[in-house]
Length: 185
Figure 1: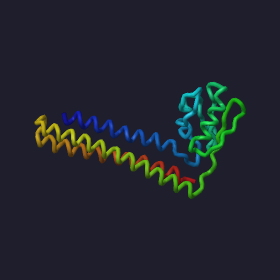
Figure 2: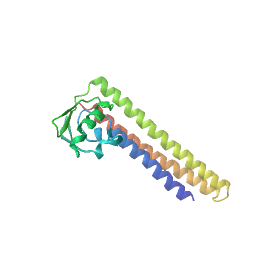
Figure 3: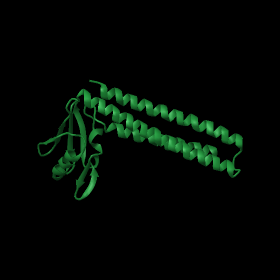
Figure 4: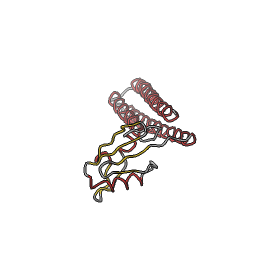
């Protein structure tokens, strides 16, 4: 019972780390990364569709993203999606490829992005703590229903805290790596 609860906690907490990594991948740094544009929603024939499903996104140069649509007729829709996104980039197209030039970040913008990274890290830590609380409550219910002993509950609580601490360390490492990346000139 306790082992099942701990493995569930570990998988849910690891999901928070993966979500944070995906989230931070979309935060713009000084260099081009296809992850910046992958999740931009494009209105494709009336259906909001992620850009990654409509085009090939690559970074041929450190400050340039190229977007090659699978359907050339969707170029205008993709441009509209990019302009309405929060990237703040202006697309240029030659009829076949859309180019996004990534300007260098100002010092103020870098510090704003670091604050955003810290906020996303805190959201991830909160979700991990919520998982810990839920699993802890489940383990107490097991003990209340006499499914596990008090000693097993105590060991389970200690193991749950160890798992939580490990995941929080992973979140901190991911966030610190992204902060360094953002501040890098």
